[in-house]
Picture 1 (cartoon, rainbow, N blue to C red):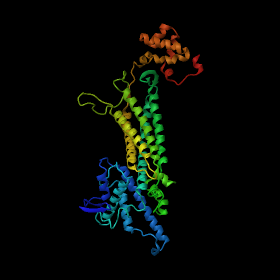
Picture 2 (cartoon, rainbow, N blue to C red; picture 1 turned 180 degrees about the vertical axis):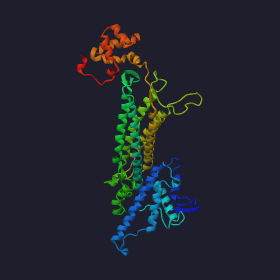
Picture 3 (cartoon, one colour; picture 1 turned 90 degrees about the vertical axis):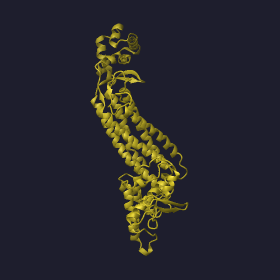
Picture 4 (tube, one colour; picture 1 turned 120 degrees about the horizontal axis):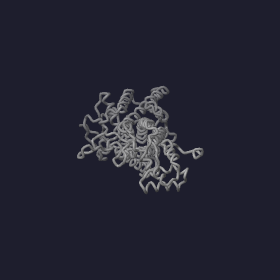
Length: 480
């Protein structure tokens, strides 16, 4: 065991631990087991790497401008800088994540996140220099690992990096799902189906028109998500505690965001107003609102598919794939587990939306202390909605089948709503007379017209052709 201390006292830690006293205190204080996001952890490592590389360039520029004896700032030696760079690079790849012990839900505006990673970076760098973990006289978590940084600019910047990386993944996932839905639309062109409004039979439609509604909704979702990076690309890195840049070299402030942009390959830029970017987190509210809109469209789609494939539907035309055994007691039962997963996931996203909205509004004066919970909810939602798109494509839409029943035309012609097609020719009231006759005698539209003789039978047969029933609108010439 080794002993570490801060101004609150001392703690004993395992000799091999790469975390330190600040992480251990956080675990004692925040008694929950919600795991921190690996994506955010790696993004903090990338931000730290950008900071150390910028520090390295600042040192080189200063040494070029000043004689060694005239340097107004004492810089770390090259071995320390290189060790920090190598250590941060390892964290950015997800290494040593098992030494990140701070839970996701916490107080302190992310200070525990920052310090846990500072301690990991420090101790990995110490090992590289053949020093034992905790030997902070050589490299210190505050003096070296946190150089020119604050929790308040590093942690939200890293959240932005992690979110942007996942949003790129989400954009691709939506487009893949949309393309598969589009294939279903093309495959079932002019396949007639009974339309429904308010769970009651309505006018005839087709399966391609149904799939086109999902395709268009997903296209809108893809477009919205593609714009999200533009909405959150400005970061407050270099702003320090509240965005004023106090105690931070101007060289560092001007160059560190560009360094991060090059490392990440993301369109990250320094915010024009670093204080605003530190104090206000409405950009995350806006991005999550886009996720919520997409979640709404997914829920609508899977609700439809679940209903149409259910045993409640009289004519079982649409079949979703059978993915797993549905009951531990009822043999042969198969449940719609993919739609149920989607519905469960999107309602978690709705809950996260409320949490993010409320906590972003809880920002106080120059900082929002709730960035850990906000970030945890945001990344959870993006990862959930990615998994929804992926499983929908692979496990449902790819293997969706439509098998029209031969009796369907009879079903369409027996539905009183089909008389809607007659309104331009007979008017509403005469068409309603035919509809009421169909309901009263439980007969189809042809039989009702034979009874009432409101239209020539040849004309009615022409109007009841599927291509007429599903075409969009009519022209005046067609009324002749």
